[in-house]
Amino acid sequence: MTTLHLQYYAQLREQAGVGAERVTTEAASLGELYRELAQRHAFSLPADALKVAVNAQFSDWDRPLEDGDTVVFIPPVAGG
Image (tube, rainbow, N blue to C red; front, side):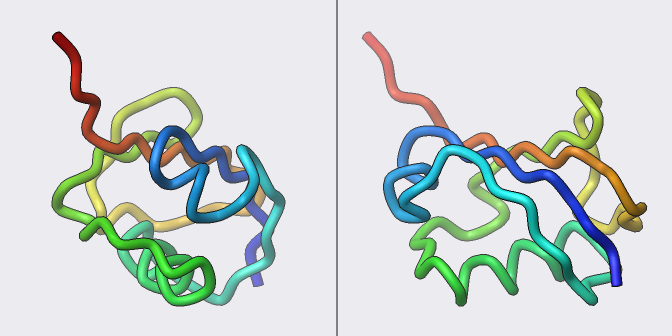
């Protein structure tokens, strides 16, 4: 089991009902983690619509998770 600190912004924050949370997971990669969280929080955005960063570095979805990682999910931002 891996314990992670998660941060959510914009639409994901609204859907999760929190801006951050600490979770313990059996997910091995960022992709697995997002699928788990999407079920838990009913996220409507697919992973390919997001950017993801781990410990302040953009990452690929297949990156393995390590205990204590800080994971930030970044949805697309509309602006004008």
